[in-house]
Length: 397
Image (cartoon, rainbow, N blue to C red):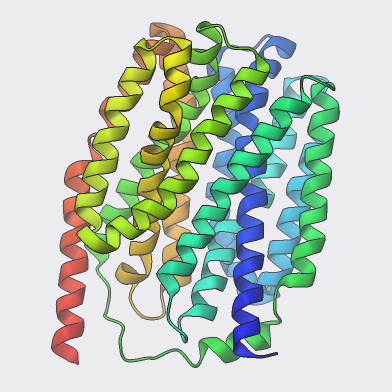
């Protein structure tokens, strides 16, 4: 198999995995109001449902990276995708909160394989020919395509069939994706051969302080994003939206987010990581507050712009991981970064869901907006670490 073929198959496999897994993860937001009505749950319990999936996904990523070194990325990624599909088949049969929790725990465990393994697969196969950041931008864009299509499709299906039938179809999608990945992912020998051709002298030692600041920035950004996505269906419901309207709203948000991933990737390359993060995070914080006060029609019109800013930041942060990781530590750095960001996303719905039970959804949403402003000084520390690593590379060359 030629190097170009290995790169193409790796990129397509990684993008496919990201699209399906992100779709399976974010379709939960469409289902939360239905599950709340079906099982009479509080907002804290709703947050727990969202949190257990993300928590398992975050907690097992480091173990997934270590297991992949023993059993191979292909087996772990295919097996994790199949497990996520089986989890939704189980959720479709849930008779109560306990069974639903078990299904989401299994789904999160399966999803834990995707981020560190798919992103490191793409990075390893593209470094020799250049274009790592461009490939990662396409990978991130594919995730938002999944976030757009799967929740939107399920929102439409829910107007035609029951939620149990819809969830069963989602599970079958996961199993089909596992078969596709099994066929697509190049052999370990092929990926090792191409990664060994990467230049060995251009990497710096990384920046531990910059990496810590990057992980914290990503954690806060993800926490606010997941918290807002958890509350958005209930904000829309209070403004008069039905099930189809909520599905459409999430689609509009994720369409904006998909273009935000691409736009912010190019913007970051032109004006730098720090300035891009300041623009996107301040815009996101302002629009989240505006979402509380706008009427239903105005909120729907604003959602693509909010999605652009809300999801765009992560593309810039992902691209900084290889720069800060240092030689030989990339897979571990990706695992740590995704563990932090997804862990923040897991905790936020639970913490802010409890706050929502006490204060109401509008105040909890505005608290999310205030939390996001903490990323502004943190991004300065990240940029300082990147600049220091760049100077070390320059002096060594």
